Amino acid sequence: MATTTTTPAVEKTAYLVILGVSLCHLLNDVMQSLLAAIYPLLRDEFRLDFWQIGLMTLAFQVTASLLQPLIGLYTDKRPIPQSLPVGMGSTMCGLFLLATATSYPMLLVGACLIGIGSAIFHPEASRVARLASGGKFGTAQSLFQVGGNFGTAIGPLLAAFIVVPLGRPSIAWFSLAALLGMAILWQVGNWYGRYQKANAGRPAPSRVLPMPKNRIVMAIVVLAILVFSKNAYTASISSYYTFFLIEKFQLSTQQSQLMLFLFLGAMALGTVLGGPVGDRIGALSVIWVSILGVLPFTLLLPHVDLFWTGVLSFTIGVILASAFPAIVVFAQELVPGRVGMIAGIFFGFAFGMGGISAAVLGVLADARGIEYVYWLCSFLPILGLLTIFLPRRSALAMAR
Image 1 (cartoon, rainbow, N blue to C red):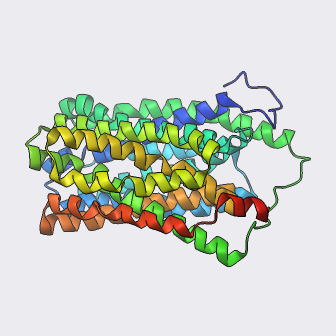
Image 2: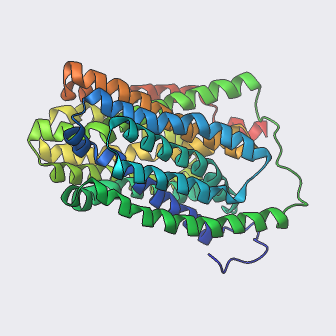
Image 3: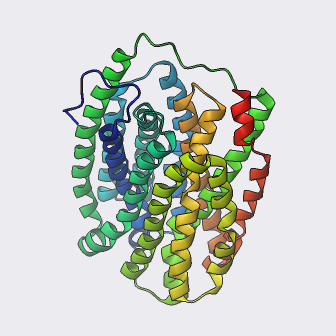
């Protein structure tokens, strides 16, 4: 990272910078995913109900969702290149609390600190990825996001083979990953500062809307609903999939974590594919296939045996994850010149909807059982039909 030139090229794709923020996204989301991965341990140690587990997810994700749009809006006007390592530091503090907590309220505070770290990291890191893209916006967004997906996928494996055998205090060792991330993000911040100086004379990006305001608002609302459908379903997997597998198939905690890794690894693969495919065939086509195309598989999942549960989980993860890079890029095209705000809204909304969904699904699981939750969530991708209300790519091009 330190070998990056003093005056970054405006038109070329700075892959080293994109890979840097992607690696930090991986480290950030490894630490985040440990929270959900250790839920079975926390439930046994602190004698938690499902609603309390859902509340922890809510504390983490809603903290992130409320702050991200505000941070994105502020940094659109006043970029803060060195804010990135600060976010990673907050996540590190949250990990220490999770490792040393002696009460449920301390666990909630730790979850909130991890949420604050995500709120600072995501809008600015997404902006850096776009600045370094050289015009390959979908590819850059996918490379950035796939780091997070891989981190989320690796988290349960690390929990299964490190935290479960060694106990909850071993979470503190993951602070070393946070220190590595802070070092890399310091270098990324330096590149960001040099980029600002090199392009100080360029005119500010146009903020003229490509379509009438009411049409833009409707499109953003539709995209938000699609993000809700994706993240509500993902929340059912990330928070309760291990319990579903343990209850239905009598798996051990480690076996259930491996199945969760299969799903989360599939999401990483879907994210890798979504951006480049969107650059070629258009973000709207990817959104159609991803949200609505996953419906037959989600409907089947609650009714099959363990083998087909694994197959369907992998298929659902690949198809569903390809939507998010396309949704972010599509929204940034609808509202030009507000990269941080849009990234903050959609990353934040994704976190918020995931958290609220996890809390509601936890109450449902206590009342009706975990299998009922998966039956109910299987219908969520029907909301993909709302994609018909999004403006076509040709209409956007003509409007410009």
